[in-house]
Image 1: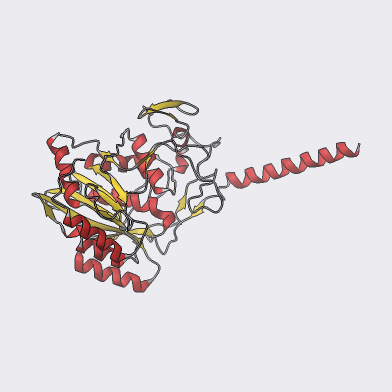
Image 2: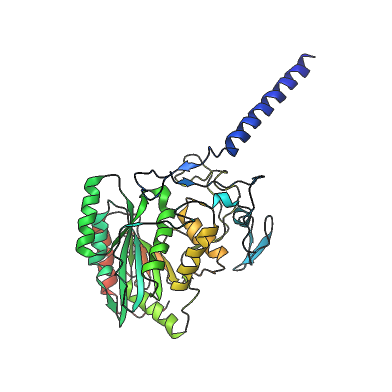
Length: 380
């Protein structure tokens, strides 16, 4: 009798806790605050990240189109010779309309607080390089301007550069950014807080800016401010595409296939089951440089209206957007290399040079090695 009573009590407690969790979940208390009225003055309310729900009984399902590469949850498909899960499509196909109401991500109510909107106007831009930079990293931006960013023309192809920033909470840093923008006319700044968890907002803002102010570019490269570009090889690589009439559906990057979320509590990249409930991501471009034709920028920008938020920018922008836009990614054989003191010499035929070091002097050394070997004959 005593054992039966304990079982009944345990069942009652379990049911009560389940009911409380369900109630909290349905009232959206798990949404994450990412901005305030002070930092997004265009909006009357705070911006919230929509969290995916597998059960929204009172919401209208948002299914705008049928995906072409997979058939839905629990299916698998062949991608680049690999048998991959397509469960992640459920993240998109089963979303409710009320989870696609983010003013920035889905409504595109971006505002450029600093906007050098004449950057591309009236110019035959062959390549636009947009550099994701932190508000405080003025030295990194200056180094880019004095290294690969000093090339505005190469082999009769015109290149433009733009640095993409979010907002800073520090007035003294903002004043410096204002002066920097006035001097160099190469900074755009969006109405969102510049933080690691807001990189998806920065990416979509970049797509917004290119779509509105530089859609005349033929190719676009997205890069972070700690990457060095072999601008000579990159132009030659893109010129070959032009010769081969490959001017559309170009998305080249460092690919990751059959990777899943990190669930460890102590990880910087921890993704909870509420944020993303499935064991695998779609194939995606790792958070390194990406090469895109302008039509890919336009397609992905339009697709952002249909995709729920995920704070992991590379998975969102390099995975969900291309997959849903039916854009296939490729990885060039000459893509890039992580540079160390041991391999800094003799690697001339790479498009991008990445380093775990934030040392400005080391980055300058890398650029000097690239410059010495610019005339090296390379195949990519």
